[in-house]
Length: 185
Image (cartoon, rainbow, N blue to C red; front, side, top):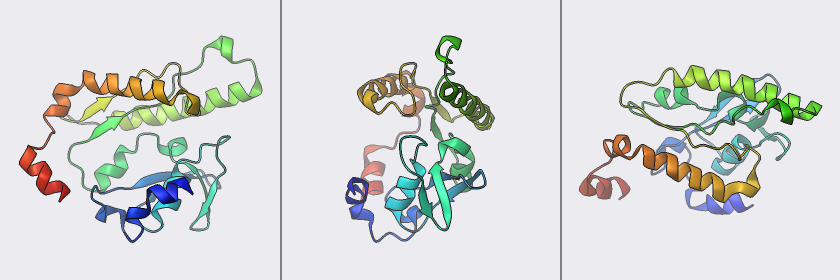
């Protein structure tokens, strides 16, 4: 309900590209292991489905598919933003580091490690497609996992620090005050 309430101002937007900042989100069809891109329809349902972290949130049935977190299949969807027409991109890679051997004492930990390994391989392949002028922000999330909802403040601080390290590269992408005013109006 909270997510639907937060997205209420955009309730009548049929295609997410028509939002003030064009948007798309990715999900993973857990039934067949493929990625799904949402760019139209029920925005709140698409966003909720795309963040259905297995073990933390139940999957969402959307368009006759059982959808979990898009990061399972495509954690850094560079291909999606390029297909939508982006020419310069800012990538925030929040993938988790692999756990040390000492933390692999349960079958759940082993399964999580295997998933993280597969996600890292896919992420590396996506990051390899970045071009000159694109910006990579990589927060140091050593103490925050993808299900670390209790560490939001730490994750935000890590993200701000990583973004500040890229301030010069980000500045080259900034709009002038006049262009920004025109953009948001």
